[in-house]
Image (tube, rainbow, N blue to C red; front, top):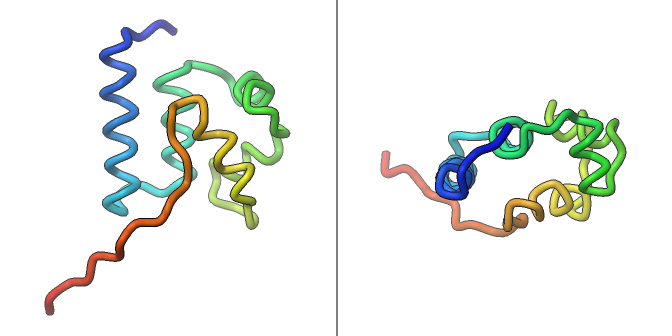
Length: 92
C-alpha cells in the first residue's frame, strides 16, 4: 500500500486529534495507523517496532497493562509519543 506523504500526514494528524479529543481509543489508533498509514500486517509492524506480535495484539485490542515503552514503540514510526493532556471538564 502506497500513500502520498500529504495523505499520510493527514491520516496521522486526524488520528492524533482523535486521541487528544478522547474520541479514539489508543488501540484503535494504533490499528488505524498500522493499517491505513503503513499497510503492514501485525507481524511486520511488530518486528519494525521491536515488540512481540502478542504485545501488539494486546495494544490493538486494549487488553493488558501496556508499558509506556511499548506504547511509544508503536507510535514512534509516526512521529508520535505518549503524553499528558489537560482533562476537559464539562460545564453542567
